[in-house]
Image 1: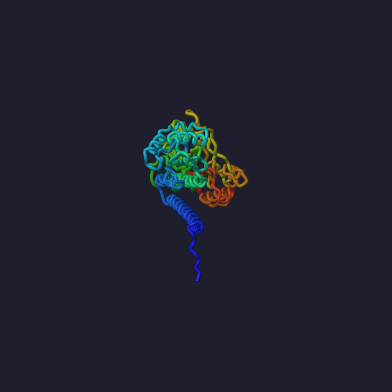
Image 2: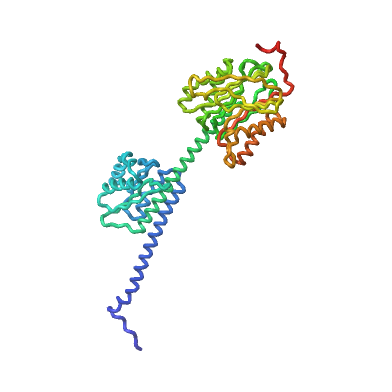
Length: 468
């Protein structure tokens, strides 16, 4: 029986050669798979840190480590800039923590903000940083990419190799760019978080200011003999510059005597809106209440208030319009002076006509020695007085038109004829204003209205009992 002779030694290498090539290919594929898996793990860890860390510094510390391992570099350095372009020295990070990287970070930290701020563009800033890093790392291969947030360069990420002649593949560059982009997302998220916190603080302060201001405005109308009162302020913002008040000229009186005493009725408007206007309004309220106690006529009250407020208003570059009046329930006499405020409207029931109450006078805070005129009128039973701020007449409708005084006059006339009382008149006027402005559209300026209506059957006392 014949047998096949064994292969000669010369034949064996040619038979095993394909097996060796396949094994090498498998080893290469395994190596590539392990590298890909490692890179995925590194990127996943950075993504986890981005989702989990509430401290930006902890995230940024990881960036050079992950970047250097992803691109098989010797090390990496992260440079971060403030939103205004200054160097964010607290966020300079590098890997590894050796002498070379430490010296590079010190050199970067010593870079003056003026040098960066004087750069004409983001590109110029990047070039300036690149020159310093290249000078410090000498001949080492270096790759840099920008960290971008909100379309602005917020830093640079540098990776450097261990020896000269080392080159970065396109895959390495893409990985480094991906790390830089995740870093930009982290910086932007931190910036948005800080802005949200600032807005929350401002909102809390505005809410506190609105509460304080609401306490300064009367929470209810006082009882004055023979009249009905209604008032409302609708600020455009949480804090507004409109002001109205009812002030007894003799606050020491109590009960019925106070109801029959003279009362000051005031409405005003600090030019502007928001917190500054609200603060000035609060300041003027205190000054005015002190002036009312003097018992002087309206023109003198405005004259003295103007002098007292000159310095504060001059520093704020704002002015105030103010209508001041006092009403005596025993005589139904209304005396008034006006510091360039919208003239109040008065509906005279007997004539079914609306008149304007005006008197000459300049804005409060405009001139130190401004003079004010004083007028007076006796109100009849059924008459209605409407004081308002320009936020009412200047309110714009859907077509861009203003509500204007004529529409307010017509609305007042219609409400007065309906005989719904002071509160009903006020409600109808605001409802008419809301219909004009449009549903769910906010007012552009603070809007305030005060309604005073003389009750029917109010008779003047005999002449012998009139006060002198």
